[in-house]
Amino acid sequence: MRELSIGEVAQATGLSASALRYYEKVGLLPAPPRTSRRRRYDERVFGRIELIRVALDAGFTIRETRTFLSGFAADTPPAERWRALAERKLPEVERAIERTQRMKRLLESSFRCNCLQLADCERYLSAARRRRPRRRDH
Amino acid sequence: MRELSIGEVAQATGLSASALRYYEKVGLLPAPPRTSRRRRYDERVFGRIELIRVALDAGFTIRETRTFLSGFAADTPPAERWRALAERKLPEVERAIERTQRMKRLLESSFRCNCLQLADCERYLSAARRRRPRRRDH
DNA sequence: CTACGAGTTGAAGCGCGCTTCAAGTCAAGC
DNA sequence: GCTTGACTTGAAGCGCGCTTCAACTCGTAG
View 1: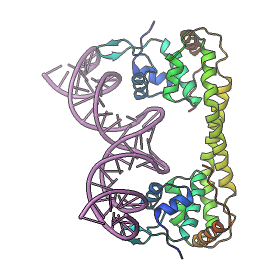
View 2 (view 1 turned 180 degrees about the horizontal axis):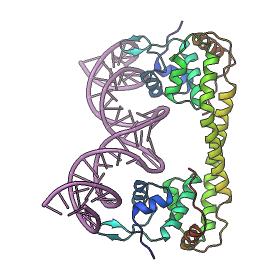
View 3 (view 1 turned 135 degrees about the vertical axis):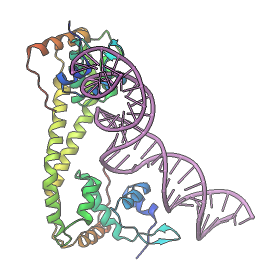
View 4 (view 1 turned 120 degrees about the vertical axis):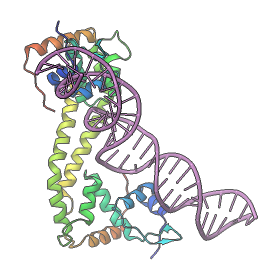
């Protein structure tokens, strides 16, 4: 079984060496054995990295990904662990979708005003504010 | 025309006083006159703040918002300036939408595997990697 | 006189996922 | 013996939009 340097793993996965070191530091990747301080990976690291990428691509933070990979309930099958974490994550992602869609709508539709100067917009909005109820949604 | 303290403006807009000071520092809000160092706003600040909120809500960064508010082409009407900036911003926001939607799909659909242990997933993925072409989309 | 509360400033901190830097280590090739 | 190049480490930096902090200044009320 061929051993790989960090550079080779980086090359093969498209990640940077510094990212791999970082993943190790934060506990996503197990620390591989070393030969005169240099990391020597074996091929199984690719599976692990794939898992990490899927989790991060799905929007999980490093911390959440670590929970998935090495956290609680090691006896529960991965698919079920994923489902549990995903269920908790979903609302957040859905809010993100809505937010970005709102942003798109705002970009496309806002400022139909005919003001010739920003100052006119400002005066108009200040005046409108006195007539309308104020709302903050955040 | 009533003068307002930073606290009153904060209260009325739902922003924090520190955010208002920050907006002033980065050039989104003009520096109001001061009475013994304290900011004294007049009502027109509300129009300005409304403009800022719309721009930030639409996804513009502080820098872009500043460009919109006080940047180039002061002779061009606001609506047109907005359109120009929005057009440049749209692709980015659309990418964000697609990204979050991909995240949602990943959360919902991934990990249909039947592995009982993560290690099984890892081995499976490492093996799959040897058989399939590798792709990195980022 | 004293205490309080709301304001002031510049600098530092935060969370996130890395990257970058400085300074060193090591093996192989010439 | 010297250079090269890939690696090592811990610490600091980044971009973003603020927040938080320490130390100070005022005006007013009691």
